[in-house]
Length: 201
Image 1: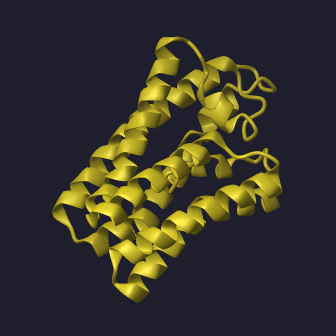
Image 2 (image 1 turned 135 degrees about the vertical axis):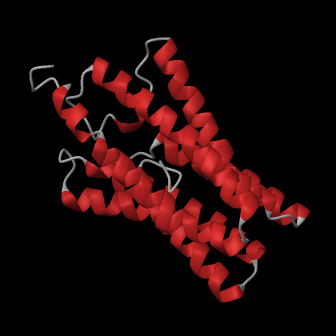
């Protein structure tokens, strides 16, 4: 879940520290490159171009290093390419700004559908992080993150509409990334309770 990807997975003790660090780097690396490029160039279109390249590089690195690319990273990468391409072609930065809102809304919709259909869809994205989590635990985690992503989508739109592009860009790093990691940490007690290695409450 990045800034728009799967940052919450990094809170778990099931993943080796080295893997945690590399996954975190893959998650926030493109965002850092985007912000740094904008601060240097003061050009949102140049920053968007570099962001697109950095996202592709992150996907390639994940494939080489981990053997597979997380589903959420693929989804985010596709949306960065599509909305980034629209931003550059139409010379309108609104498209790269609404990308996170649409991403969050899409992921929330998928998670809500998973809850409605009783399918632990989040397990396909984060199963490697919580291998002992029961289906009930996945259902609860998916529900929690679905509502969390709804909040993030609304928050992104509020910031986009009321603040400058630079402020909006900075919030990707100092607001959205920490919020996602904190929210993942808040869910750890529930994950522990519903892990199959522990008696369920």
